Image 1 (cartoon, one colour):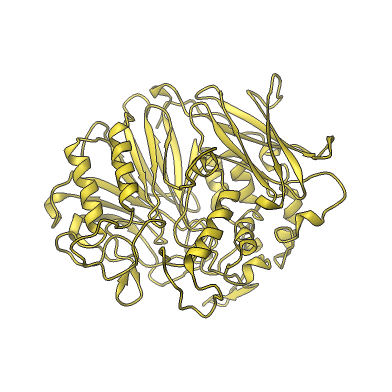
Image 2: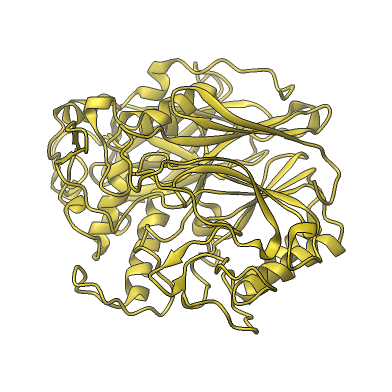
Length: 529
């Protein structure tokens, strides 16, 4: 375990304030209007923020604070060393209005490293700053400046998918409450943060006769096409009290995959799907990215002069750099993946060059490659095409595998130590060890890939392995039947704990209910494990 002294969890009144506004609606289990009502129509009273607060991309000295108002308002953030807010610093944020769906993100900087930071968000009437709503409180830890502090974080993905939404009968998205109680330094959300292509129905009858009930909203009643519908998908998850409490206590590093837009999408795709009136996926992706930027505090999407890109490095002290990849926005078309020359691949040439450059620059003991798709698991797209990297051919690299082979070769020859891959996407949990002695392509150093998820979606059987990079499935826990509901199959998340003294990194694959399914300890300073 890390030597960072455990900080007490904040008072629940701190992290849950504001949750009661939606709790009554959730308890009904039916259609709610909290997420879909037009805030501009709320003309009386003081500004409110029933969707809670959250932080993202926290570093040693900075972070991003997010909120959504129920009407036009000025965002004001205060930070302090304690809940008393004595000596608080004040940050004046943006004016929240319809252009951003009444959401706003405020950067806070110059913070002390390795400390618990308390913050409160106040929404003020833009015409009368003295007229303010109730403050919404939250907390986060900045990254440590010293190695001995250690690091501990969680990761998972796949939220509200396959028709399994917020079920008040089972307490909503309970895995979030389990994760909150573990009090990690941050949470890595590995994509499929929403299912914009996955409507939820009021109820679903399970094979054993039990009834799964969903909270429903207008925007979740069909596939998302308009900007308003994409926004409504991101609001939907915030109706869950577990999610709001978690967000108020644990910073998130968020990335996207396909379901933020549409299943298995790629740039330039023209849809052949009768559910969509807009067939151009580039139009849909632009709307989805705008909604994602509005609802997640992501540094490269919010920084002044930023390129508006998802991929980035989030540095968490001397022990850890997190390389957040975007395996969706720059890929080529899904295909059988047998081409012998492929410079675009799944990352695109520019992102690959960026990743090589940043990996070579990194001085962190551990370098997590946060991938939204797995490497050696065969993920099909229809009967002939493939969605991820692997395409089922066990021979030399072809198609998108060529780009990954180039990256793995680079890591070996530059002797970059401490790399490991974390991902979600496939709706089960597993650990794969990749080694050249088992592989068709041999010019790389051994490494590990850990998979977790879903967090609040259907469970699926394990995918086949492609032996091009020599994966050995050391552990897997997956259902035997497709799309098991969260009532039938436990949800999964992973934990990474880096010890401050030894630098040893321990991965734990966890199941909802508190069970640790698998544990693996890795030693620092090695090119391959």
